[in-house]
Length: 361
Ligand code: GTQ
Image (cartoon, rainbow, N blue to C red; front, top):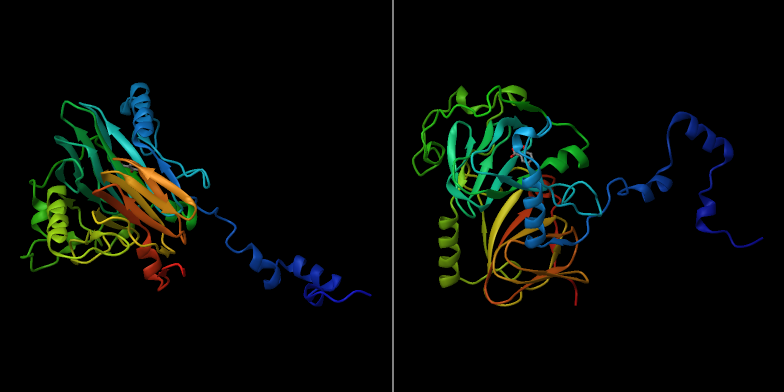
């Protein structure tokens, strides 16, 4: 008789195995190796802007928005992380949307949190959110809170392009739930607020009373809108970055690093499920670290490389790349570079589960 292996000690008698099978149960020591295998792991990946541009131009030539099938009715090319197959990450979705001159992406609303980060914008390119027209200038970030109507109207004379960023995979894939969705009866929602209305509600002086108008209708009845409709103008964000760089020290991992705050609370994260940062890298390579949150980066300007475990992602302006959970990474800009970072960190923080560390050298 050979030596007994530890597994042998745990062998179940045929009767016990039959009972467990019949009753629909499994022993933990056999199940635990299956934990974490339902959803595939993310991989480091990069999409070069020239390639994205080629794809969105081709799609734009083929497909007028008005002829899109029922569904989201948006002309969007979706970067796919080949490790998972339907989105850029397991929590955050990114799409690249175009609207040609004269076109409208029709009004709808949904339970996912969403925002636009403008790539090619124009004063007469309006995303209409919660009754107000928000002009989309280059690098402006405009929120579309849960269950607010939104349509995108291009009255300019050029094609406009932006990133759509939503928490769809968190609900649809990771939590495997469907979301509430509704099309407006009109292609364009009525514009019932003057321009600047939403911005004015979250300044240094605010309305004293909260009324029923503050609660979201429909499936979220009674819950106060956690994130207001809001436009963060890039000119403001850029000014703050440059003031920081002129006066302060950078973060070792992320350079000069600004969080987009929830305008209601004045603190990050912008959404309960996603946080957004603008980073100015101007003082050489950053230090390596890793964390359990996923990060997606969009290169606002500049060039450089991000080292992710054994991969080197070389980027230029407008490229998009993914740093998977737990991957050791650092940035190495070529001179000065500005990045937009999207992260699912708030989900981890909500469960007291966020962790980050530096690799032991
Ligand atoms: O523009 O409302 O890429 O609802 C995916 C879902 C864009 C949008 C997307 C959407 C939108």
